[in-house]
Length: 586
Image 1 (cartoon, rainbow, N blue to C red):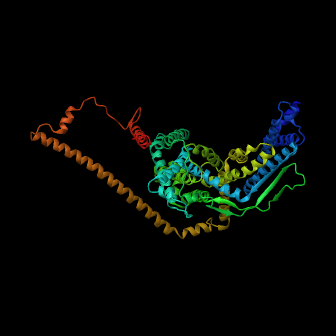
Image 2: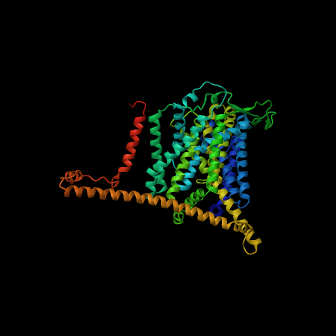
Image 3: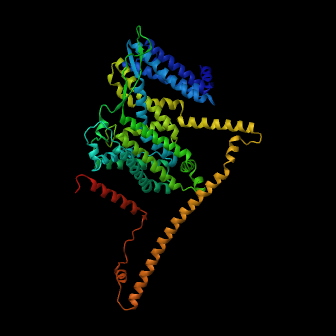
């Protein structure tokens, strides 16, 4: 017995995992197919709990097997293994359900409307990206998770609703139906939400997060501070707009049943379980076209377009290169002349503005209340974890995958729920992205963005190796082609440096002018005071104030050991503004 135990210990870790995965799959198969296995033999469980545990056992065993098999795959086969792992996950799920329903003596029919699944996937991806894009950008540049990002989205939603209630746009929103879509309010709401929410994020960054950065606070501290900001913003929204739900209506024609476009589609029917004379799958006949609302289309186009523009900004502009430099190494970026604090402010404005734009467009689809942000924050975190935190391309792909999973899970759960007599099972569609996230992270612990980055690095290494091999002197054709444009690049660099010098000199001159004006004013007041005393006019007003000022006057400093007076006055002013905007305040 001891010899057997020593042999088991001598197995490699991967071999033990493979052995455990095989045992779990075999035991779960015995349980689901023959109502046997360890779960049934222990006698500790009865009823539906037996097949539930056996299904979970088969899923875990399959995930462990897939993880061990693809952990050995490297290099050019990494992308293939990444794609093929999703196929294996789908096969594992359907095999488990096939065994389960067959053992229960029932069958289920799952109807996949292809156009509905695809367009709904884009819709959910855009909804999640409204929060996830700002989260990823903030983490990329400032290295902390901003829990207030969902509330920034809500600020954009309420900006759109407030514009709808304004005297200028309310006649447009409340106009009778005329079968003509009015775009004025929608465009102004999108632009206004982007700008106002961006400014709100910029002010919060300057007032709160900048002080933490100056004190070298850890990312965990800033994340907790963002949670406090989120609670404050949510409370302010409750105070101003109450807990009621509101919907943004750019024009009554946007809400018509005819404000949709139809897409031809096909419906795939899957038969799982006890099939008698039925195929595994077939295409349904006489399928009507799928209608997709214009408001959802605007949300998809607006949010996905904003994220694509953000990608262009990060990878094709000077500002984007500065942001990526600060994200990689802030100290090194500062030593090269990059204003790190300005980059942080820009990222705060962009992340809040994109969320505000998404919130304004989402308000035309979903009813808005102060709790909506929390329901989208958790799936947004799932998106950025799946796509690798801080990777904008990875988050974009992760949002598309999570949105597709969310869209597929609804018809899937409806069919399975009807088969096992649980029709309310479709309510678990919101949980499916998280279950999918757990499965994917077991296969790729660092997410999609890390896999994309490693693939890009390997490809660049192979290209450099090939260029060095073929180039003879180690200079590739790409470097030779760049060399032709060195004079133009040098001119652009000198031109941008001169512009920056002029910009800085203007601000220096303005600052010196203000300081000199203050000194001259102070000297003038002193001369007036001395002249009045010399001419015998008696004590002047300044002398009178100086002699009657108490010697023990309290000196108010901007920063004290007990806190900041500036922060106090700012928060006090905000409370006064909020109180004045309340409907009950006169």
